[in-house]
Length: 43
Image 1: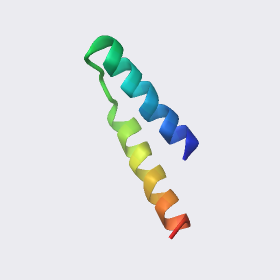
Image 2: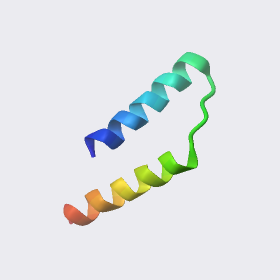
Image 3: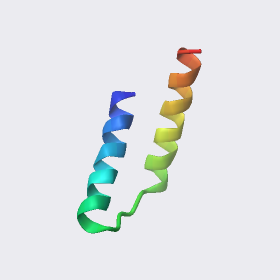
Image 4: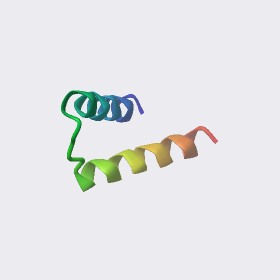
């Protein structure tokens, strides 16, 4: 989960610096899977 949060923070930093950012589909899927796994593990 920490890795997922770090990815999100990197994207937010890029957005604030460049005003644009390309998010790869694989990264989005990875974030979604990580979130689902976290929610399942924590009820």
